[in-house]
Length: 79
Length: 71
Image 1 (cartoon, chains in turn green, brown):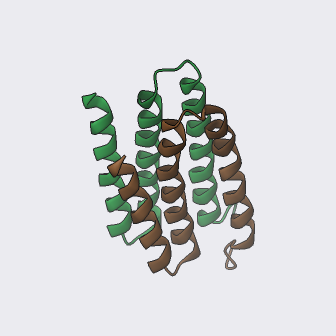
Image 2 (cartoon, chains in turn red, brown):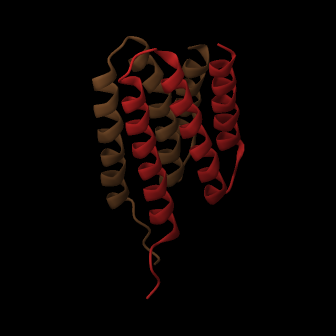
Image 3 (cartoon, one colour):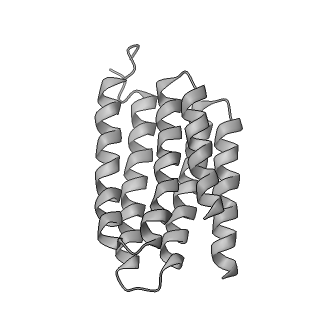
């Protein structure tokens, strides 16, 4: 039961760091930290076999999302 | 659950206060991350998996709109 509290604390701390950071490129690692912590919360919250599938789907989706934001912000290949 | 509510509220306040569209998208993804434990807590695991795969698609479609002009 202590592990889910640790994950929740990490999620809130990383969200506050995302708010307080000024540079957009420095926000993105903390966004990844929020995604990992929420994946941990989802996996620990409910003792059911499909929970790990939902956690894996959220992990894939959030990583895809933050990488898409990062690649669009950096502007792609310079020609 | 209180931490996830805090996550949703932090994402909402940041999405309102930021001006840059990429900062708004980052805050929006924090908000979506805060929603998921509420869906899983009720036991709707299939809904959570489907939403986790559909929500990044909407983010990618918004990214097509707000692409940087000075590349």
